[in-house]
Image (cartoon, rainbow, N blue to C red; front, top):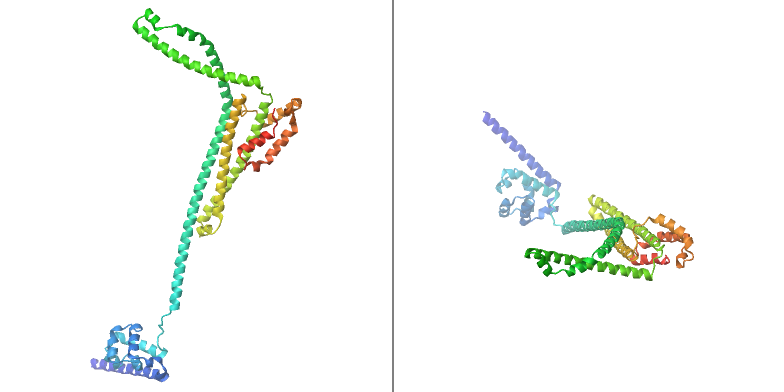
Length: 429
């Protein structure tokens, strides 16, 4: 009894579903004139293409081709319970999907699946532009990194030049401190050589009177050999002392001849010391200018480092002229420091030679203030001495002011020209 009831209910449900499907099919046919729809004009091949590409059921393409299903038959496929679907061998799991796709094609027309070459061209162009932009950004990033590394190397070389300048300045300070002690040692050495020459006059003659024969007569063979050895050592030492004495006497005679032909004026030492101090003052100004250039270059490098760490910092650095400016400032600072170092080395050697030729200290002096005061006191008394009286007390200050005002020009001037200008502004004794 229950089985019959279930069968009746199922049959009723099937009849209702069939009626609903038929109603839907009739509604579709009533609402649209199939003759005006593009789908109605589809051929068997068009239906197969639609089945494969849009419905994605290629396994039923052969059945559609065998039964010659064209566009005029598509409205019958809207009903999922129709006998046509069963005749085509459509499985139940695919009937509903095929019915929905057929309804969509009948109601809204053929699906738009045309291939757009314009879109493809735009897509490819966009991809090319994106890849090119990424490659361009990578190249600029690598270029900026290379420039930053080069700038760091230049900064290291600038630091080395600064260290060399400091080392040379320290050596100059040590030389100035030891100049006075060295001059005293030279005088003491000359005095000792003179005393040795007095003592060695007698031994030279007495040493020549001795002979190995006299020693053999006084003692045994062993004592004779020992005496010969000591005599040989004494003769070698005597020869070395004689050569040193001869060199010292030659230098002393040369100095005496120079002194006999030309006497050093008393105020020459003060003038040379003043010239040395003024030259050192200009050197300090030049050194300070080079130090300011170095600090400016270092600040620029620090700014570049900070900008490089920022977002898109490499691209901004690559498109700006800051790297070239910083590199040029580093090169200028390094050249300025190198020029200061060379000037200092040349000045040190030149004044040492002048000290040797004049025979009095120049580098070691009481200072610029004391020298200026001393020359201001001595100048009125030297008016009758010729060329030395041409410089008045006011001219010293004026010359010093002129040299200080030329501090910026002295940075670009060679050491020899700067020394010639200093000496040209000071009259000779």
